[in-house]
Amino acid sequence: MPIVPCFDPTTGASGGPAGGGGAAALPDWRVVDVTDGSWTSSDPGGNARVSSVVMSGDEATVTWDGFTATSNDALDGSTFDGQRYYQALTYEDGTPVSLTDAGWTLETWVDTPAVAGCARTQFALGVSSVPTSTSTITANLGALYWTPDRADGVALIGQIRTNASPLTALNLNNQYGYGRSAFIYGKGAMSFGWAIQSDGTSTGFNNRSLTAYAGTVYLQFNLGAPSTRVITAGQANKFALYYRVIKTPIGPAGHAP
Image 1 (cartoon, rainbow, N blue to C red):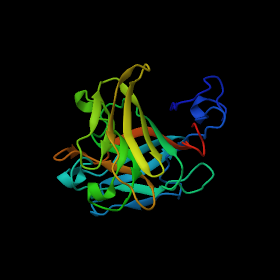
Image 2 (image 1 turned 120 degrees about the horizontal axis):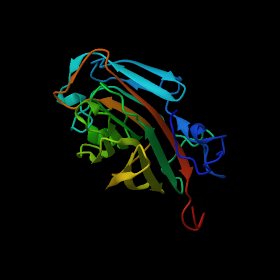
Image 3 (image 1 turned 90 degrees about the vertical axis):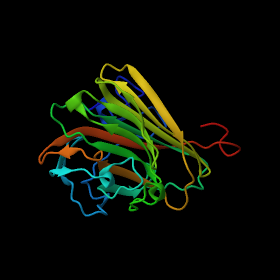
Image 4 (image 1 turned 90 degrees about the horizontal axis):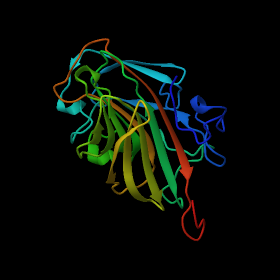
Protein backbone atom coordinates (compact mmCIF):
# COMPACT_ATOMS: atom_id res chain seq x y z
CA MET A 1 0.00 0.00 0.00
CA PRO A 2 1.40 3.44 -0.91
CA ILE A 3 2.57 5.52 2.03
CA VAL A 4 2.19 9.30 2.33
CA PRO A 5 3.30 11.59 5.17
CA CYS A 6 0.85 11.83 8.06
CA PHE A 7 1.24 14.02 11.14
CA ASP A 8 -1.01 11.69 13.18
CA PRO A 9 0.58 8.23 12.86
CA THR A 10 -2.51 6.56 14.36
CA THR A 11 -5.44 7.87 12.34
CA GLY A 12 -4.59 11.11 10.55
CA ALA A 13 -7.20 13.73 9.72
CA SER A 14 -8.58 11.57 6.91
CA GLY A 15 -8.61 8.26 8.72
CA GLY A 16 -5.12 6.82 8.37
CA PRO A 17 -1.66 7.15 6.86
CA ALA A 18 -2.64 5.70 3.48
CA GLY A 19 -5.43 8.28 3.21
CA GLY A 20 -2.99 11.14 3.36
CA GLY A 21 -4.53 12.97 6.31
CA GLY A 22 -2.71 15.79 8.02
CA ALA A 23 -2.87 17.44 11.42
CA ALA A 24 -5.58 19.95 12.26
CA ALA A 25 -5.60 23.02 9.99
CA LEU A 26 -3.39 21.33 7.42
CA PRO A 27 -4.95 20.27 4.10
CA ASP A 28 -5.14 16.66 3.04
CA TRP A 29 -2.67 15.25 0.54
CA ARG A 30 -4.20 14.97 -2.93
CA VAL A 31 -3.40 12.08 -5.26
CA VAL A 32 -1.95 12.98 -8.64
CA ASP A 33 -4.36 11.17 -10.95
CA VAL A 34 -3.86 12.47 -14.47
CA THR A 35 -6.83 10.39 -15.63
CA ASP A 36 -9.42 12.12 -13.42
CA GLY A 37 -10.32 14.85 -15.94
CA SER A 38 -8.73 17.76 -14.05
CA TRP A 39 -5.38 17.60 -15.87
CA THR A 40 -4.47 18.83 -19.35
CA SER A 41 -2.23 16.52 -21.39
CA SER A 42 0.40 17.98 -23.70
CA ASP A 43 2.97 16.32 -25.97
CA PRO A 44 4.50 19.22 -27.93
CA GLY A 45 6.88 17.00 -29.88
CA GLY A 46 4.12 14.61 -30.90
CA ASN A 47 6.40 11.71 -30.05
CA ALA A 48 3.78 9.63 -28.22
CA ARG A 49 6.36 8.10 -25.89
CA VAL A 50 3.79 7.27 -23.21
CA SER A 51 1.47 4.43 -24.19
CA SER A 52 -0.89 4.69 -21.21
CA VAL A 53 -1.36 5.85 -17.63
CA VAL A 54 -3.60 3.64 -15.50
CA MET A 55 -4.62 4.21 -11.88
CA SER A 56 -5.30 1.49 -9.29
CA GLY A 57 -6.25 3.19 -6.06
CA ASP A 58 -3.51 5.74 -5.44
CA GLU A 59 -0.94 3.92 -7.57
CA ALA A 60 -0.18 4.97 -11.14
CA THR A 61 1.26 2.64 -13.77
CA VAL A 62 2.91 4.41 -16.70
CA THR A 63 3.47 2.14 -19.71
CA TRP A 64 5.80 3.29 -22.47
CA ASP A 65 6.05 2.73 -26.20
CA GLY A 66 9.37 1.52 -27.54
CA PHE A 67 11.87 4.25 -28.44
CA THR A 68 15.44 5.45 -28.20
CA ALA A 69 15.41 8.73 -26.31
CA THR A 70 16.80 11.90 -27.86
CA SER A 71 18.03 14.96 -26.00
CA ASN A 72 14.49 16.39 -26.30
CA ASP A 73 13.10 13.47 -24.27
CA ALA A 74 15.29 14.32 -21.27
CA LEU A 75 13.86 16.45 -18.46
CA ASP A 76 17.24 18.04 -17.68
CA GLY A 77 18.17 19.57 -21.04
CA SER A 78 17.49 22.97 -22.58
CA THR A 79 14.58 21.54 -24.59
CA PHE A 80 11.92 19.08 -23.44
CA ASP A 81 9.18 18.35 -25.96
CA GLY A 82 7.81 15.20 -24.34
CA GLN A 83 4.73 14.27 -22.37
CA ARG A 84 3.55 16.47 -19.53
CA TYR A 85 0.33 17.00 -17.61
CA TYR A 86 -0.63 20.27 -15.94
CA GLN A 87 -3.36 22.22 -14.18
CA ALA A 88 -3.65 25.59 -12.49
CA LEU A 89 -2.43 25.20 -8.91
CA THR A 90 -5.24 25.53 -6.35
CA TYR A 91 -5.74 25.37 -2.62
CA GLU A 92 -7.76 22.49 -1.17
CA ASP A 93 -11.02 24.47 -1.52
CA GLY A 94 -10.42 25.02 -5.24
CA THR A 95 -9.32 28.66 -4.94
CA PRO A 96 -6.51 29.41 -7.41
CA VAL A 97 -3.08 30.03 -5.94
CA SER A 98 -1.92 33.55 -6.75
CA LEU A 99 1.52 35.11 -6.68
CA THR A 100 -0.07 38.02 -4.81
CA ASP A 101 -1.03 35.76 -1.89
CA ALA A 102 0.76 36.46 1.37
CA GLY A 103 2.39 33.06 1.40
CA TRP A 104 1.95 29.47 0.31
CA THR A 105 3.96 26.27 0.14
CA LEU A 106 3.63 23.39 -2.29
CA GLU A 107 4.53 20.00 -0.82
CA THR A 108 4.96 16.90 -2.96
CA TRP A 109 5.53 13.24 -2.11
CA VAL A 110 6.28 10.15 -4.17
CA ASP A 111 6.33 6.48 -3.19
CA THR A 112 8.23 4.66 -5.95
CA PRO A 113 8.82 1.06 -4.93
CA ALA A 114 11.51 -1.11 -6.49
CA VAL A 115 10.16 -2.96 -9.53
CA ALA A 116 12.51 -5.32 -11.35
CA GLY A 117 12.86 -4.52 -15.04
CA CYS A 118 11.03 -1.21 -14.83
CA ALA A 119 11.57 1.47 -17.46
CA ARG A 120 14.71 3.56 -16.87
CA THR A 121 12.97 6.90 -17.16
CA GLN A 122 12.60 10.33 -15.47
CA PHE A 123 9.75 12.09 -13.66
CA ALA A 124 9.24 15.50 -12.05
CA LEU A 125 6.33 17.18 -10.22
CA GLY A 126 6.33 20.83 -9.21
CA VAL A 127 5.45 24.43 -10.07
CA SER A 128 5.81 25.98 -13.52
CA SER A 129 5.04 29.16 -15.44
CA VAL A 130 4.40 28.00 -19.04
CA PRO A 131 3.59 24.29 -18.94
CA THR A 132 3.32 23.78 -22.71
CA SER A 133 6.69 25.34 -23.56
CA THR A 134 9.44 23.13 -24.99
CA SER A 135 12.06 25.48 -23.53
CA THR A 136 12.84 24.32 -20.01
CA ILE A 137 13.81 27.86 -19.03
CA THR A 138 10.50 29.28 -20.31
CA ALA A 139 8.49 26.47 -18.72
CA ASN A 140 10.24 27.42 -15.46
CA LEU A 141 9.70 24.12 -13.67
CA GLY A 142 10.94 23.75 -10.10
CA ALA A 143 10.15 20.23 -8.94
CA LEU A 144 10.68 17.01 -7.04
CA TYR A 145 12.60 14.73 -9.42
CA TRP A 146 13.14 10.97 -9.48
CA THR A 147 14.48 8.26 -11.78
CA PRO A 148 13.24 4.71 -11.07
CA ASP A 149 16.36 3.35 -12.75
CA ARG A 150 16.51 -0.07 -11.08
CA ALA A 151 18.10 -1.99 -13.96
CA ASP A 152 21.66 -1.01 -13.02
CA GLY A 153 21.16 -0.40 -9.31
CA VAL A 154 20.49 3.33 -9.56
CA ALA A 155 17.64 5.01 -7.71
CA LEU A 156 17.94 8.81 -7.85
CA ILE A 157 15.62 11.16 -5.97
CA GLY A 158 16.10 14.89 -5.59
CA GLN A 159 15.32 18.24 -7.17
CA ILE A 160 15.24 19.76 -10.65
CA ARG A 161 14.92 23.39 -11.80
CA THR A 162 14.67 24.62 -15.42
CA ASN A 163 17.72 23.46 -17.44
CA ALA A 164 20.06 23.02 -14.48
CA SER A 165 21.41 19.55 -13.82
CA PRO A 166 19.18 17.68 -11.35
CA LEU A 167 20.54 17.54 -7.82
CA THR A 168 19.92 14.05 -6.49
CA ALA A 169 20.84 11.55 -3.81
CA LEU A 170 21.82 8.05 -4.96
CA ASN A 171 20.89 4.87 -3.13
CA LEU A 172 19.52 1.54 -4.32
CA ASN A 173 17.10 1.60 -1.39
CA ASN A 174 15.64 5.02 -2.19
CA GLN A 175 11.85 4.72 -2.30
CA TYR A 176 10.27 7.96 -1.05
CA GLY A 177 10.77 11.54 -2.16
CA TYR A 178 9.58 14.74 -0.49
CA GLY A 179 9.53 18.02 -2.39
CA ARG A 180 8.82 21.56 -1.24
CA SER A 181 8.58 25.00 -2.88
CA ALA A 182 7.63 28.10 -0.88
CA PHE A 183 6.49 31.57 -1.98
CA ILE A 184 5.94 34.83 -0.10
CA TYR A 185 4.10 37.54 -2.05
CA GLY A 186 5.30 35.95 -5.28
CA LYS A 187 8.92 35.66 -4.20
CA GLY A 188 10.06 32.05 -4.45
CA ALA A 189 12.59 30.59 -2.07
CA MET A 190 14.03 27.13 -2.64
CA SER A 191 12.90 24.20 -4.75
CA PHE A 192 13.72 21.31 -2.45
CA GLY A 193 13.98 17.53 -2.95
CA TRP A 194 14.63 14.98 -0.21
CA ALA A 195 15.45 11.30 -0.85
CA ILE A 196 14.30 8.75 1.74
CA GLN A 197 15.09 5.04 1.80
CA SER A 198 12.52 2.26 2.18
CA ASP A 199 13.31 1.93 5.91
CA GLY A 200 12.71 5.65 6.48
CA THR A 201 16.41 6.54 6.59
CA SER A 202 17.31 9.86 5.02
CA THR A 203 19.61 9.62 2.01
CA GLY A 204 20.00 13.38 1.71
CA PHE A 205 18.35 16.48 0.26
CA ASN A 206 19.11 19.08 -2.37
CA ASN A 207 17.75 22.50 -3.27
CA ARG A 208 18.14 25.38 -5.69
CA SER A 209 16.78 28.91 -5.64
CA LEU A 210 13.57 29.35 -7.61
CA THR A 211 13.62 31.83 -10.47
CA ALA A 212 11.07 34.60 -11.12
CA TYR A 213 7.43 33.65 -11.67
CA ALA A 214 4.61 35.67 -13.22
CA GLY A 215 0.96 35.14 -14.08
CA THR A 216 -0.73 31.82 -13.39
CA VAL A 217 1.05 29.28 -11.23
CA TYR A 218 0.76 25.74 -12.60
CA LEU A 219 1.24 22.30 -11.12
CA GLN A 220 3.15 20.32 -13.75
CA PHE A 221 4.06 16.64 -14.06
CA ASN A 222 6.76 15.72 -16.61
CA LEU A 223 7.51 12.22 -17.96
CA GLY A 224 10.70 11.65 -19.93
CA ALA A 225 13.86 9.62 -20.42
CA PRO A 226 17.60 10.42 -20.52
CA SER A 227 19.09 11.03 -23.97
CA THR A 228 20.17 7.82 -25.81
CA ARG A 229 18.28 5.62 -23.32
CA VAL A 230 16.54 2.66 -25.01
CA ILE A 231 13.04 1.98 -23.71
CA THR A 232 11.38 -1.29 -24.69
CA ALA A 233 7.72 -1.23 -25.71
CA GLY A 234 5.57 -2.29 -22.77
CA GLN A 235 8.08 -1.35 -20.07
CA ALA A 236 6.39 0.41 -17.18
CA ASN A 237 6.85 2.38 -13.97
CA LYS A 238 4.73 2.27 -10.83
CA PHE A 239 4.43 4.98 -8.19
CA ALA A 240 1.98 6.84 -5.97
CA LEU A 241 2.28 10.61 -6.21
CA TYR A 242 0.74 13.26 -3.93
CA TYR A 243 0.69 17.02 -3.39
CA ARG A 244 -0.88 19.68 -1.21
CA VAL A 245 -0.76 23.46 -0.94
CA ILE A 246 -0.45 25.06 2.49
CA LYS A 247 -1.26 28.71 3.13
CA THR A 248 1.64 30.26 5.04
CA PRO A 249 0.92 33.95 5.70
CA ILE A 250 4.01 35.85 6.76
CA GLY A 251 4.35 39.35 8.19
CA PRO A 252 1.79 41.79 9.64
CA ALA A 253 -1.16 39.88 8.14
CA GLY A 254 -0.19 36.57 9.67
CA HIS A 255 2.88 37.00 11.92
CA ALA A 256 3.59 33.26 11.69
CA PRO A 257 2.73 30.29 9.48
